Every structure is written in C-alpha cells, then in structure tokens.
Length: 339
Ligand SMILES: [Zn+2]
Ligand SMILES: [Zn+2]
Image (cartoon, rainbow, N blue to C red; front, top):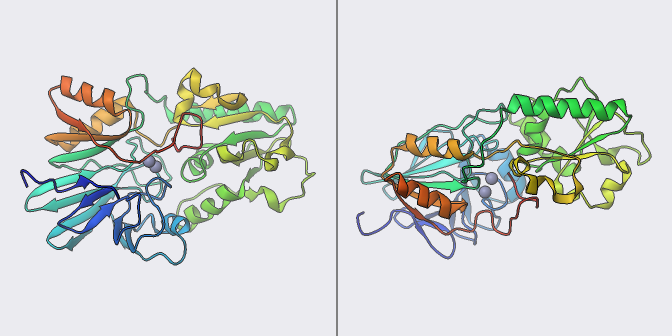
C-alpha cells in the first residue's frame, strides 16, 4: 500500500476502497461505518451502517427506525473483501468508537471524536497501535487543559445550591447527546429535582436503556407552564436558549457546560451567568498522550485546530499532515456544537 492510501478523502467522506466502505460519510453511500451518533458523524440516508453495540440505541435514535444498522462489540472483528474492521472505545459519548482497519498487515485507525479521561457514561478510551492514525483536534491548542471533573462538578453543585437558596431554578445548557448525560452523572441529585428539555429527556431514556445509570429526571413540557421552578436544575440544549420554551423560567440564572467555557471568549456567549469547562473531547495533553500511545508512523489531523497540531507534531519529529473533512462543519465556539 505504499503509493495507494488504505483510507482516503473523497467527496463523500473518508473511504476505504478495498473494503468498499466509508467512515462517517457526509453524503449518502452504500456502506457507512459510524464512529458515534453526533450529527456531524452519523448522517441519515445511507444504505447500511455499522456501529458499536454500545452505541446502537443512540445511533438508532438519530438515524431513525428504518435505517439498516449492524453492530460489532468493541474489539470484535468483521472482514470485508480482505479488509478487517474492528471498533475500539473512544470515550467520547455512549457507544463512541475508533475504527481500526487492517489490510495486508497495514493498520489504520480513525479516532472519530475522543476523550481520554474516564467518565461513567461510556466505555473508557483505549489506545490502539497502528501505522497511520487519523486524529481529531477539536481542542488542539496548548491553552486547552481540562480542570479535574470532580472540582468542576463541585462548583456546579455549589452554584445550583446558591440558586436554590434564592428560590430560583438553575438552567444548564448542555448538548443533548452526551454532555447532558454527563451533567446528570456528575451533579448531586439530592440538591433538588431535575427537569430536562424533551431533546435531552429522549436521550436520557436511550442511555438508561443501554445500561447507564442516571438520576431521576422529568420532562419539562409534561408539567404545567405556571409551575414554580425554584430550586430545580433545568437541563436544555444550547439551541433552546432563545426559544419560547425557555420563557417559563423567566430570568433564571444560566450556565453552559462545554469545553469552550475554559476561555473568557467562550463564556461571553449569550449572556451566561456561569460557564463550566467539561468537555467530551481530549485536551492538548490528552491528544498528545493518545497520539504517542498509537505508536503510529504518520498522524493525519482533522476536525478542529489542525494547523497548530500538524506544525507541533512535525517539530517533535513526527510525520503529520492535515486531512480535510467536514466534521464539526459550521461550528463556532458557543454555538450548538458538541464539545
Ligand atoms: Zn462528537
Ligand atoms: Zn465531531
């Protein structure tokens, strides 16, 4: 495979010609291998899909009941036309997987989105040895270093208690798939009741059905509009921030939970009262740890801060280049992007 790439960019997405499949294609294709269920990776309309068994329910909820979806357990192998495919935990959201592709002794790994720090809403990231590693780089700048999750959630709990003491609800904006469930798993449910936007509540149900324990929650819309919300924690997607739906909470304090909250520019978005820096992506040290662990001879960087990352890797004597994909398309800090 010296002159021909086992996985290459095409108009429809990352393509393995020998195996006849695409990985997270952005157009409709015959055969799609899906790293995880976020919208920039799992797009509806393809002929058939392959995803991790852990991710089946959330992927199904995104692709719809008619989609043809096969699954593999983590580490399990499928051979298509001499190409062996297996999926390995990416630690990003429930069911997220790195895709390992092997053909005639050459091994490529496509990371999808990943996070190296363990959390209890999904299986922890596992490094996979390979020759070529296609890595995401959403937070690929040296300024991104996550604080310990426990201390961030302790701050979030304190803030919720202070809202409760003033008889106000605490509104938390968190991406509905993955981040909202991490918030649920991280907060102290003894502080007060927890209510969720329907987009969040739907995915909470998929997480629970997939075996992830979450505290009790209730859908906001099932309750009378004039209910008193003081002391409650409200979890809604960032897209609901300016909606009529939000009107029922009046001038309740708002916080956002996102990796972008680490910087002041991120926190300025949308007149937030607080920002809590919890991310589902690897930070700068996490990306470099993961890259080193693969032992790869070439790193292909995509999804985010590609230029800085490629330059830095080359300075370290590691062969690296940018790979153009549409993952994370149309995103800007503080928008609805997952983070
Ligand atoms: Zn993602
Ligand atoms: Zn992504």
